[in-house]
Amino acid sequence: MADRSADRILFSLKTTGPKAIGDLGAELAITAEAARPPLVRLREQGLVETSEERQPKGRPKKLWSLTETGHARFPDRHGQLTIDLIGTVRATFGEEGLEKLIAAREADTLAVYLEALNGTKTLAEKVERLAAIRSNEGYMAEWNHEADGSLTLIENHCPICAAAATCQKFCRAELEIFDTVLGPDCKVERTEYILANARRCAYRVVPS
Image (cartoon, rainbow, N blue to C red; front, side, top):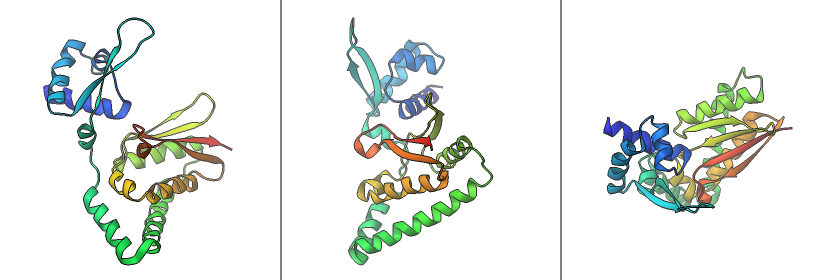
């Protein structure tokens, strides 16, 4: 039970960001005191840390969040191998060769996504299907309807973060893929970006 609570805490902090202990306890359907022991163990393991958030009145709120080591608990698909391969392609074939590699990957991904979204009729159905695909690929994706009529696609994790940090053309290709598969009746823009020190990547999808 203790290990399961710790895993659920890590998942919560990864997907929804820093939280006070009371909020974590409520999410896990346990008391704040019951949430404290697994949090302490996670801190001892270097997986979580605390910070203070100032409040308009009273004492600052203590928030728990993942450390860099905690984030690393979520898989980055063969990160170092991918970095080495990118370096080899650059050294052997130059930037033009790397562009061709990314373009080929983009074309393959686009074909898979278009096939998966075949039969969807509304923009919401497309975003929902795309979020499911990305979750299966390890992005811990979800989506929301917004009050202004737009939709938000959220990726709480990037399983190719090491590769993207080495070559941000992967991210450019990703945005172009989303724009294509969701169709000409909407505009897609990135609003949050892990490589810009955000907690997650998020995309705003606005109907035309």
